Amino acid sequence: MEEPEVQLTASRPSFRKSNEPGLSWLVIIVLLILLAAAVIIFAKPQDVATGGTPTVAPSDSPTPVMVVRIYTVSYDAGVFSPSNLRIHAGDTVRFKNDSIFPIHVTSADIVGFDSVGDVPQGSYFAFTFAARGTFTYYNTHNKDQTGTIIVR
Image (cartoon, rainbow, N blue to C red; front, side, top):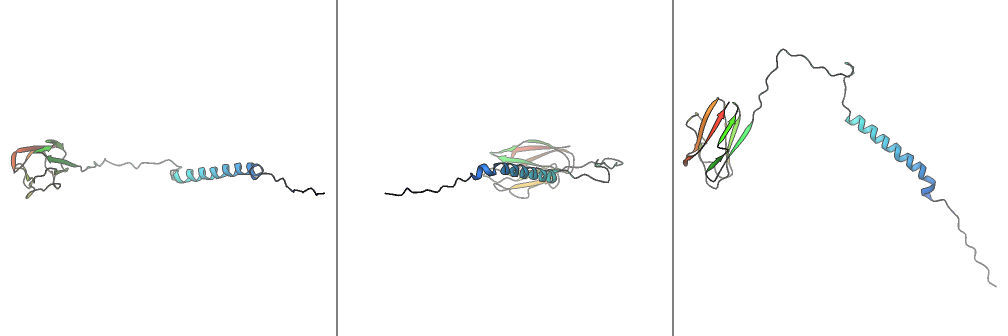
């Protein structure tokens, strides 16, 4: 006669079922800590001495701020683009040669406005316009290739 085999199986509660409420609370606490850290990091600092309201110091007269701009005039296929450009005094214009041929940019209207030699392909010549007026420039290799700068 054979003896019956005894199998021992212990019934253990699953980890997930026994720890599910604790895990939920742990996730909620971690999210609250992250939210608090985000508020602290991204909050705007306020001055405690003035009660948290920013104040602006009065000035006698506003100081105009001059913004210097840099414009680019491209040269390609025998044409300056844009051919007419309106700028402010103190602004700089860069003449960029996108052509395969060298250019020599100059003007008879302004003293010192000359690229002093050829501007090769991919290079540029820059000039800052200090005086107001209308100034015509041209390519010395072909005087029909012109453009105009209007300085206000």
